[in-house]
Structures are given as C-alpha cells and as structure tokens.
Image 1 (spheres, helix red, strand yellow):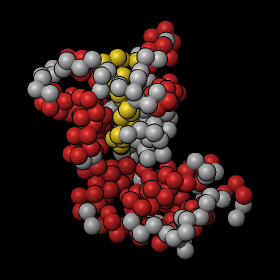
Image 2: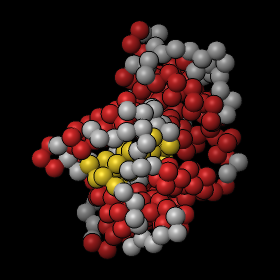
Image 3: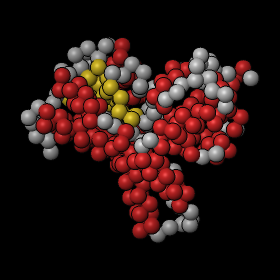
Image 4: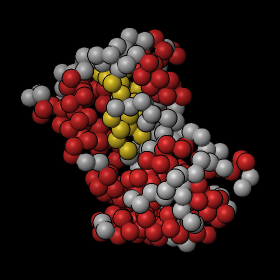
Length: 289
C-alpha cells in the first residue's frame, strides 16, 4: 500500500453502522486526502455504498475502485463487499430509510436528464428534492436530539449564532426568531469583518449555535474554535460527522440538504430552525413569530 493511501487499520472490523461511523470519525484526522474523500462519501451517502456496485460507488466518490477496497481493509474488513454488507443489512432493517435511498437515487438519475427544462419542470425538481431532504431529516434527527438542543438554548445565558455564506439566511432567521421568543441572542453577522469581536464575549455560561455546510465557512469554523476554547456549549448544525464543527461540540444536528443541478437548497435547514424556535417557545411558555 502506498504511503499516501494508508490509514490506521482497526483491530477488528465494525459490525454495526454506528461502530463503523465511530471508527471512521476516529481515524479521519490521520487519513490521507484520498482516504478522507472516501470516508466522507461513506458517511454522507450510505445508501449508495450499500446498494450500488463498487464501480458505481467509486465513480460517485470520485476515486478508483481500489481506493474503496483499501479504505475497507484499513477498517479491518477483508474487502469492500463486507463493509457494504454491514451498511446494507442495517438499511434493509429500516424500510423507511431504504425507501428514501431508492427515491433519492431515482431522482438524481432523472433530474435534469432532458437538458434545458421549463420553469415548471425545474420547480417540480426542486420540490421533489426538498421533499426527499425533509423526509430524510425527519428520520435522522430524533426527538431526544431536539429536546437536548432546546434545553441547551434554554439553559444558556446568551445564545451566539454563527452562520456565514450559504448558511447565513438560516442563521439570521434563527437569531431573529429566538430574539422574538425572548431569548438573549447575539447574531455574529460579521459586518465590517468584525466577527472576531462579536464572538469575543462568549463565556462558559453561553451557547454557540454554529451552522455551516461543505465547503465549511472559515469564519464559522473559527467561531467554533473560540467557543470551545472558552468552554462554551456548542450546538453544531452541519452535514457530516467529519465536519470541522463536530469535534468539541456537545450537540450535533446533521442535515442532508437537497441538491439540484449543482444548486443546494436550505429548505430542510430552515425547517429545523423553525422547529427549534417553536420547541423552545413551548418549553419556556413563550411564543414565537
């Protein structure tokens, strides 16, 4: 195995998806660029890994099939098929998840296949993609996770909210809505390049809600670093277990957004923002607009 392809081999192969995910996350920082590429795909697209051929998985991950095999062996599996079986068996146990994966694959194959489309056709594509994203979020984020996130908001002295670039609309809405619900909130909007000054006042009694998706906004990642250094509680809303916002966060909510013709949506994220605010309002006997 070439040195640049090597990552640490696990003692025994993980037998559950949860164990597999944990092992990938544990090894991620030590992995080469190519192995990180494979790791991200396995974590973010388990349906593809489980039900597609090795050639298709490699093509979608942007690597050679041999890289998938090396990655599986680094985790202790004899080959890629054994890793695929672990993921497939668990997905087959959940008919809802399986249905989502199949619908998502069919949608990706059909979206934009006819080239230039009418406005109605594009609207249909985006609506269907957002329905899939909302369905997946409903499955993947548990009631317990929402309750814990709401409790963290309620227990904090001040909620700091950071979300730049694509996440900015979701962050600004969340800041507005929490303020309307009576929560003391500091929106780190970075006006005038002063995001560092805005996050500087965070303390161990406060909460940072950091929102960012691949490719991750540098400002949000640095706000996350400041918050963890100050021992503040962190709630990260992101798209992958290997996102830079996950390490050091006490609470993580993963959102897989829709993507149509290389344009990514924010529908699922905005739905999550509204859910958090309304849940907080009910939990604290307040009202939100």
